[in-house]
Length: 117
Image 1 (cartoon, rainbow, N blue to C red):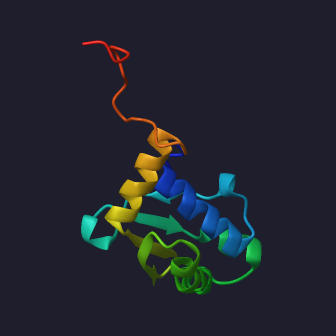
Image 2: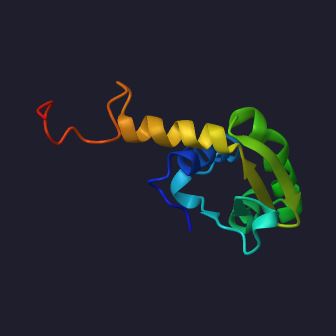
């Protein structure tokens, strides 16, 4: 299940939507059952059905195009009807910090004392 509050997952889903033409609301990133498989996994059954292509073909197309469209993805591997993804941790951290602090670079720790000691 996709965590829509995760900025890294949002960016990856947007790139997959761009590649496939599917709305992001129809896409779901999941956590693979084994960490060595990757950070995220995408099932392509519904995308394959909509395109009329076999799932492995759709998975291979997404895996080939994704790293160029989502620079935080350092590896995308098609495995049957799945695309397994590895994410650059530093990139994901920057996205998360940027989302948490806003574009203006606000502080992560709230200023509870408003400058007073």
